[in-house]
Length: 297
Image (cartoon, rainbow, N blue to C red; front, side, top):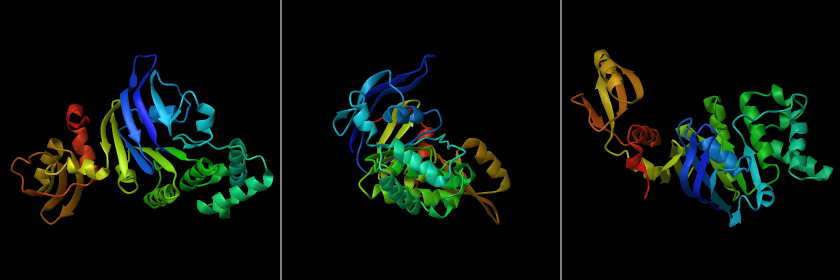
C-alpha cells in the first residue's frame, strides 16, 4: 500500500502546530518515522488511522482518499497505539477473539483458527489462558501487535512499540515486525529509538517540530554525518571538558582515561580520529544543526 501525504497541517486550539505543511510519500515495506518527543509523530499516526481529522491537507492510500473512504480504509488497517490497554477481565485468547470480532470476523470457527494461529506467530500460545493484564511488558506488546494483525491488514501502524522493553524483548519485537513486513504488508514504525529504525527499515522520514526534515534511506541520512564523528582518547579532565562541549554518543573506560565518541565538525585539538558514522550519529548530527540545513528540496 502506497501512501501520499500532501500539505498536511494539524493546528490545535492552543495554536500549537503539531504538523506544518507536511508532504511525504510512504512506499511499500517497513517505513520508519523518527523524531524526538513532540515532533508530531503521534499526531500523524492518529490522522493516518482515522482517529483524528487534520486542520487541512490530503492523504491517499492506494489512490483512496483517507477522508472520503474512511470505512474502506479502516478495514485495511491494523494499529498498535503507544498507550495500548487491555480489558483486565479477559484472558489473552479472549482478548484476541474480541479483536477479531471488531475486525469483522463473524464466524466462531474462523475466529478460533485466526486466534490460535496469531498466538503461535507472536509466541503467546502457551499463555493463551493467562489474564492479558498479567502478561509481561514484552508479551503485552506482542499481544498488541497480534490484535493489529488479526484481520490480515494491508497497512500496519505501530506507535513507539519498544519503549520500556528490555533489549532482548526489543529485538524479538523488531524481528516480528520484519517477518510481517515480508508478507507484503506496509508497516509504519513511529519511534524516537534510533535502533528500531536502523535494524528494520529500508526507508524512513525524520520529523522535527512538525515538519519533514529528511526522507530517504537510513544510509542516505548516515552519509550526511560523514566527517563529523570522532573517537577521542581523553583523560578524566578532558572527558569532563568534552562532555560540556560536544554531544557525546558513547564512553568506554580505558587505561589512559576514556575512549569517547562525539559528533562535531572539529574537536579543537583533542587527540582523536574520524570514524564512520552510524544512524545514531547521523540523528544526533541532525538535531545539532539547523532544520534548514536538512530540509529536502
